Length: 446
Ligand code: SAH
Image: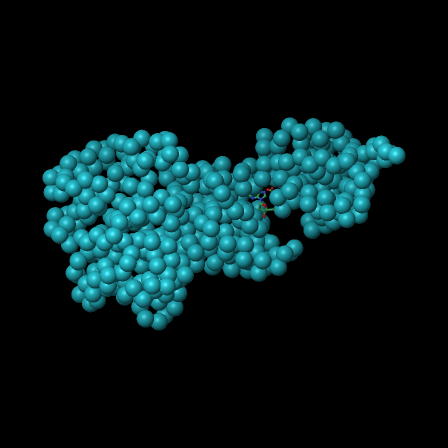
């Protein structure tokens, strides 16, 4: 015997992030078709014009179960729209509806209407920080314990996913954000974070910040944490998907050489390259690195002090694959064209700051590109760590008269490809020049 025909229907309607333009036509149709509109007060207010003729039932925040119960009961005999912000599946009411209906063996017709979720709204406003595989984590521990949230965050960080953070904070829950920031810092240093408040609502605020600058985040904000490939150019945050490498979206001559972007700067770079070719004519990556170091120091003699061990192209491959870059000091980190973390941020007060910092993040050293531009003691610490946690590539140009020459000699003896300087010469500038040269090669189309 077939079941009795149902008279009601439950629409679970995602209304998008805020503005009407971001709502789907199907969502509007469903609300128009409904006799009842049920939802959290704030969401229902956003569609109040569509609900004028309807019977409206609103419930306060955190009364989800009550909302679901009311909507499901009504939907047995009426057409009901249960309203959800963004997309109803994503930290929304839909899973609760399904669970309630299944667990209670209730047979009603349900149609879920997807909506534009906060992460897609925010990503479009920022540029395109999400790209390819990305992870989504909510910092709310109302439904799952904090250690689970933390574990998921750690795995996402380890996987080099761009991470969208929903529910970053609430009046009651400031601590979770602090703990998350600390974790992110550990894996990604002072990484770029897109901070979008009230996307597609009246008081919309879109900012690109460093992790350390994040302060007044509230519950109408979503954060998008960049990964090692994320970049900010002219106020746009984006994570390249590799099109330029594969299809040559960026033509070869357009890949900025020596950081030159404007026509005038390009012209200077071209002239400079001609002169540099006169000093050192070697083709390929190593030739480019040598010329870049000459250009950075203004010292032709530097070419006699550069040492290459192993396959230098491994550094390019590592960066192409989105490898983490670890520097000893901030000065190197800020000079790089990619996100990196600085060992000095993790210092614990023992030894020198850079050495203790590097030892504290030794697990992260494995398979990374390590760039040491200043501190011989960081270079020595790296030699200690490298047998258990071998980096993929090393650029080491620490400078000075105490341990600089010795530490670099030790690095050259490791079984890891490297670029170093011989003797006391070196410094952050050269280190940055070398790593940026690797990055530029990594960005060129094949
Ligand atoms: N179902 C919703 C998410 C609900 S969880 C969706 O798909 O978007 C609530 C969290 O989502 C907020 O704490 C905030 O982090 C994020 N959020 C929702 N709408 C937003 C908006 N318009 N702007 C910024 N963040 C938003």
